[in-house]
Length: 320
Image 1 (cartoon, rainbow, N blue to C red):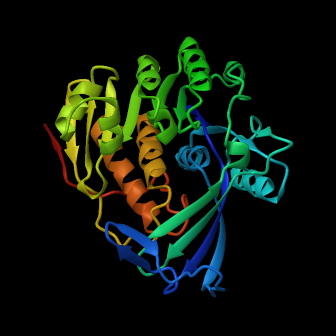
Image 2 (image 1 turned 120 degrees about the vertical axis):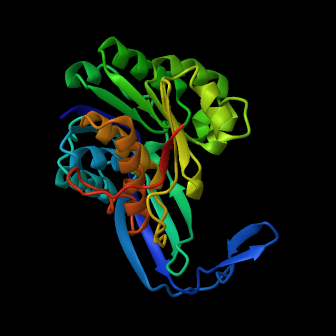
């Protein structure tokens, strides 16, 4: 069992689910929700209140694997914030390092979901999860983590550097899944990779950081900066290396997508949860893929997250 800190956001997700009014309509290369007209009143089938956010989703995976999961994030003392605290406690996640911001509402996303296709559009007011400069890296002195798992901090490179340097000073390992705002600052992001033990990005994100058009090229170049690199490529699977050990992998199962929200979080945290449990590199990739597949087959960003004892079948994966 490991002590793993999840650094990132926690949001309330409000799902508006319908089978016909939210059907995507294609206009050229763009898809829109074509039946929702300005000024109209639309009846939807149902509504569902969930909790999500990269920091929260990853912490759920770690807790369900029996690890000591600690979440560090910002919320407010409002109903959405209390729902997040309740969810953290229900999952057995340490919430004692959560920061309560007084003048910001808890971040909230409204997910418009077409129940037929699984396509969705997300409207997000990040609120308390918009900024992370109030995070105190000295919390890690008290926690003494084995791993620091970091999702997007909305481009706050200073806070990332402070936490990365502190974690390394304490002997903790770091897994990093950067977001859009970090990738927009590619030069600063590349300088942070000297702290990182595991980097998880998709193909488009990898191409923003290094040269290359195919997965093997991208992996080779990123491997010069980080020992363990995972590059996912949607339904094509992905490629990963741990030093000189390289695997090309497909998808775990071809399932009907009910809700793709949280798939990336499930993959990254599933990989780390397995590695922290002592599984080998190949087995951790299989579990990561299975965890992501399970999440997209259910409504919500974390309902499908798998536990440690689940039995898995093999998937297309080859050492190269």
